[in-house]
Image 1 (cartoon, helix red, strand yellow):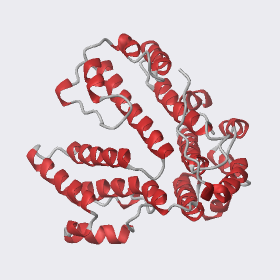
Image 2 (cartoon, rainbow, N blue to C red):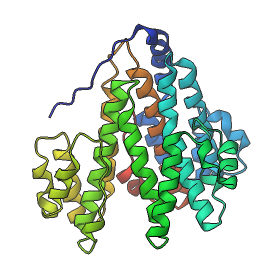
Image 3 (cartoon, helix red, strand yellow):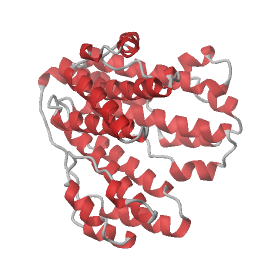
Image 4 (cartoon, one colour):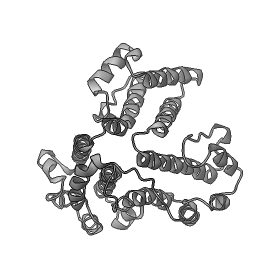
Length: 336
């Protein structure tokens, strides 16, 4: 099935698109990724990044094992660049908002377990981390935006009702975050991309539940707001694993599901399916290459950088754990 993305012409993005087209030339290409995969050691891997956007952070690392500092710094830089280039402030708010939900989930878990998970917080949300921590320390949740306040209070209530099951915290926040993402209206393309992300989250849930037949189907949770109704996923719970792709034959996901499930049947690994899901999102981003007016290329560049950071994280983790190039590559998403 041919994929078409929604268009939103907006001359205000003309300057941003000019900048983005130049910045795209600095994104890692397939040849560079291959060279990174060929690195014998994590130190060599860092050296190969010296002349890229990541090179500016390398002198600050005491060892390759601190690579996450570099990746987080680059993520923050590109979000701030996005904010500078976007003429629509609501768009930046919506780009940052998922990190607000992520951060309240981390702080909820920290509070409930009396632990410190500061390392997992992202300083690129709309609410500064010090402010969020003060709110959680004092339990002054009314100082949060109303949707975040309701999410925190609902998560805490469900946590105690469920006999203190920590998974309930994550499920509640993720559910609220997904609802928010489908409501964003600053860009039709961003909304389209978010809906595809929700589709893929639901497919991951569906396939894993069917692969592990001992799972309690009554507790399976699907996220509302994608292009496919939650009811369709629930009906698919009665299908065999092999027949799932055929239920979704008329969607863009048919071939992905067929390939990924066949690979799982042969290897008992979801690596192929995970890769194909990531590649599908990259293909959506690539469809913006010939758009010359509108927010789409700017959004695509940001998510291409996020994908690139994910690729680098996987390579670093693989090299540090001495995983073979072939095994790393098996799961590695395509780059933009």
